[in-house]
Image (cartoon, rainbow, N blue to C red; front, side, top):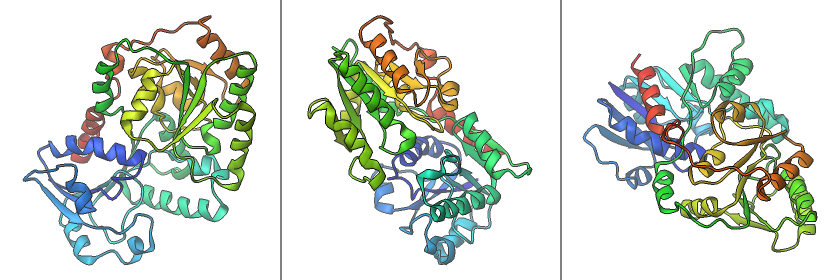
Length: 359
């Protein structure tokens, strides 16, 4: 079987990681592959195999060129394969072979205030097009599956298959380096400053905890350069805390992220919406406790894990839980056993994808 894989997303944040980690397992299968994307970037991952042909394509996903002016020579190659698989939900016009896509979440109709009305309409166009065009749709949780079916199903039967996300293998290797590491007085948050990530709630709770003499520092890991006007509320919340209480790292390499996670006393993930949500899993793999909101995706993903939940958006309850955990009134030992360490792996994810492609 010849499978065309859309690798144009290889440098996207979450989507890129998903693609980078599943691709090696895909290529180990007894199939042939056309990898569509930036040839130099794909080759930088040291992909050397007789069953791979790299198709150089720098046309951006979700672009006019993708929809109306996609190169005919590339389309000809794709249409000579048996199927087209995309780890996201943008599909070039002119593909005639069966299409399979991954829709990681459908946050925009669920949280419409994240974008303008025009932006929402544009995204819904691509969501609906991918859903209609795909023979099967993959997603990362039962929660996301239910929301996809709610917004896109319209009573039509379309197979939506859950293929959970997972931690990167490098994290498991790093875990062995930090066994018994001394914890610091730090709390870590990983994500952006958009409303659905809940950073505003965490800052409110952190300010209340500081008034009760919490000695810890808050480390916010993620991009902080792209502030919108409405996001300046975040900066106003930080000012009363002083210069040293909150550190915005901006983008940092994976090694530094893992260092902060392994040294932290606690990870707090106060999201109001997630399709999966990896940071709590990453923290626990590195031996750090996770305090997370009680949203549906987290309740599903972390049902068997030693996490602590709080009511999403409730800063007072979040502050109380932070104080309980960090002052050892409710100590939590995080030492995941093999079953939980390997509950979510990209090898398992890829096996499900391959099974569905073959069927």
